Length: 418
Image (cartoon, rainbow, N blue to C red; front, side, top):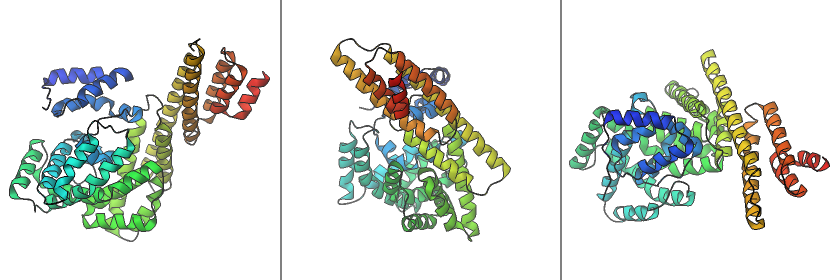
């Protein structure tokens, strides 16, 4: 039985204001409540003020069919007010319409394809987005047939009933009917190569040039918007691929224009990501900062006017300040934990193990964040932490080990000498 929640628009606005001002723990409570709804409708809008924070906190979210389907295109999903027809972005209001159309299209097929949905639903039942192996397993099953479904939708080759139903639902979201087929055509090549995009993003690997050229060539057959979407995603997810994307477009005026569009989309995504860097430093934080720093470098290496360079400089400053703020807050949490270590030996050892695991994550984060700037401030923060550890009631080797993980062997030796 599906759950729905009908909330008056004024109440939704009040809730949104409250969520925007809430602490991380309260935000996560709201997220769990919203995620429990199968038909979220307008209620989903309460999360809009904190979406940037959620990308930083990265809570595990239920692995719903629609969320799994559009994971590959997530950087290009925007709110309806920010969407413009013909751009390489996807309005959030289109997600449920298109995911339902994909399900109906797969259900209407014969043989093995029709049997895929129960398998996919079984894999993602009670799963969440943090279970990367399940994401890959379910994604490998859903993305290829979803690409085929998008092609059929773009060509209006589905049964008339399926097409009209999708078109009516699309229009009900305030989207122009004429945009449905082009959007489906643009998403088809993205979903066809979704596994490669997902794997390379998480492995921080560089796609081979032949693979990249093949992906862009298939996207080009889907139209200019499809090429721009693929180029945008490659630039954002695999920043090292940016020069190769530009090389494909060189000498081809039509593609060069789309390459500029992709660069603008990547810069807009980066600005959005770096605008709000509040939140804790989770396991994925070092990788995220490394990707953002690599994207900054890739975009700075491209030709651009003074306005673009100013935007990139501002994005670098926001990223650097956000990283420093998060690092300082995390060190303060570590210092507070030192003051409340359990007395019981087993519990104390477990708490120290947890602190060391956190210290390793902070060290990885700090190394990546230093690429963006703020080296002197990082040094000062680590010196304060070194003093805090030195003053804590720990055995000398425990103090040295913790500081060695956080600040390196020289700092640990200095602490032992003291």
